[in-house]
Length: 129
View 1 (cartoon, rainbow, N blue to C red):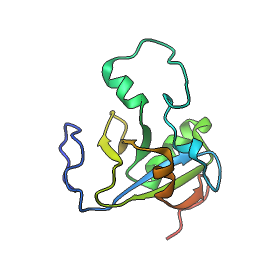
View 2: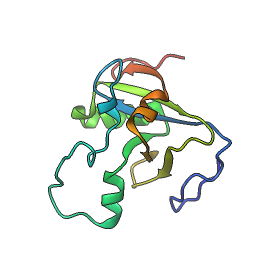
View 3: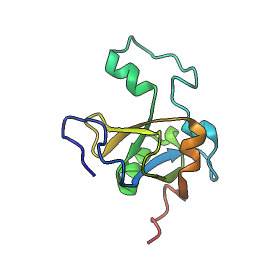
View 4: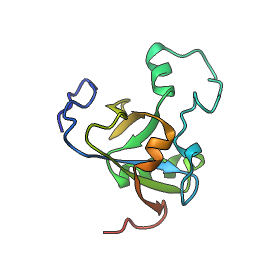
């Protein structure tokens, strides 16, 4: 996988990308993959251009452990962690974003994101090997 430290979009579309996203239910629903913008949530304060772009995508992490740590700190994000395998040449865009360790933003149709889910585990559970 070829990405720069500056957060450029992933360059190598031949590599299946694996991400972990917090979801409310098992099985997850399309709503779990809608952005705050798609859900119609009003920001608490004016947003920068970068913040507006991030708000139009969903957050995901490089590892299950990173997602678990974030979900533990913010329980309203969901009790489950969905593992997504985004296939090569998918229309889903990904970019390393924010200063949060392993944080990525994913942009794509919620149904397409949901179709990429390969497993869901309870946040408090140990990840299966």
